[in-house]
Length: 464
Image (cartoon, rainbow, N blue to C red):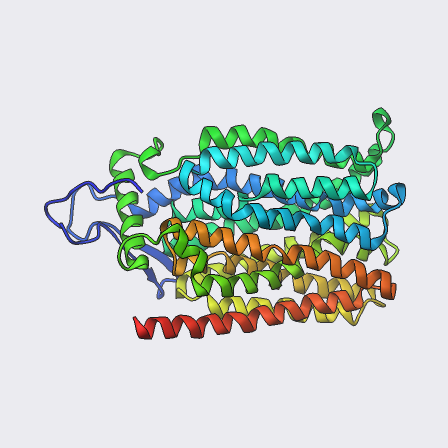
């Protein structure tokens, strides 16, 4: 964070006070408490920051989830062509999360040293190239190897982006900024029906349609890497799209908030690795990714079991994330306005558990099952949106980068177990009911763990 500009008038007073106007139902950011004819409009500054960064970040997340989930659509024809069983597919789909977990902490250490601009650009180029190369796998072994390499290439992107957002938006607006990210993750659901149409390219230039899915979804990551390098900036001091006074206001505001969060100075990178609340959040995220990735990587084949065509599978699987956008934005705004995260997460997680429960017991009735999936999607994506704001409530600086890395890295192991468990259950029982029920149980457990985090945080505050 850039150094403060001195202000002889208020040497010990934060330059800005951020508060929530709960009466009007929207945020109000008050600038310098001493009147000035050139006072900075804090909301205008944050709108500029949002317009400059968030559309590009949103596009990057769309491409991220296309490259994570393309295997789910490709499996509609790839598995039969290459002779891949449900268990082998579940392993290949999930092994990505092992390498992702191993490489996540060091990747986030690097990003805290070299900055988001250069490291995120590097990440996107390499994951795009690996995705393109996946088009040329010849069996379950080579598929698993490419998925492992994808995890290596992609490690650090999501926590790096979340850390980046935390360095540009004060806490009172961070939930809104994070909700933008989750909104684009939901919009990426439209990629599923589009990818099913790519299956129609079967035979073009001698390649199967599923191979074209990997090629076409890998190219945008490489192109967006160059856009990120040109547009992202690591600190407000580098923000040429802001005036000098606006840059100074934003830097002082974020730094004052970071000092308040940390108590005395920024937390060290090591602090983020050993903080007990971080380890509890790892367990919560394990449950979330178990359900999210298990659901996302198997939903196409679940819907196919209802007798739907590939095109129908694509459009119906897009419904849950798209329907989640409105409720998620409203709930995230409510979380920002009330400055409360725990109960907001628990409520959303309970909705997800309910939806999965409905789907699990209704697979004989496709309409009710799809309704259950839609309810689960609303709760799941909303819970994820709230979850990503929680670490910044007790960590800052390098510790926040480390915390995001540990939570996202270790927590994403759930992304391995979710698809793998679903595949094992499918081979063992011939159906998906028990797997869907497991997704619901994991979200219920996540809600219980967050209640434990609230108790731990209250105890820490009482002993401070």
